[in-house]
Amino acid sequence: MESDDQSEDAANYVLHLYITGATPNSTRAVQNIKALCEKHLRSRYELLIIDIYQRPELAKQDQIIAAPTLIKKMPLPARRLIGDLSEHNKVLLALGLSPPPGPDSTHE
Image 1 (tube, one colour):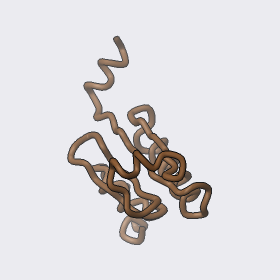
Image 2 (image 1 turned 90 degrees about the horizontal axis):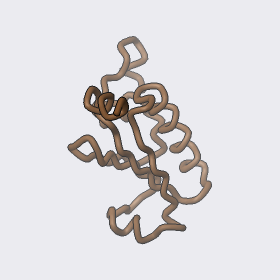
Image 3 (image 1 turned 45 degrees about the vertical axis):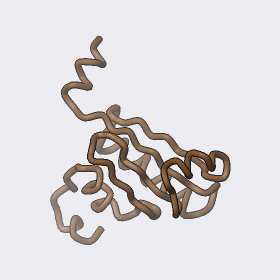
């Protein structure tokens, strides 16, 4: 019951990251999104990593045309980001989170 109360207080994020095997871009995207989620969402997210070589039907269902692609399914509105997710402030904005204030916030 406690976890239900917590989920009412903060939005829970459902994220799907489509990758293409262990390519450098895919590896960076996985590392970047995991780090961002742990830092900014902690226990408020569900991250599903989908290799389009192993699950092409899911890629087709979500109309994936490039990889890596991150889809924010929840909370609405849904958003898509393509690339290795290294521009942390842009990823945070797309997730509906505020980037941290400071001189670096305009450079990422």
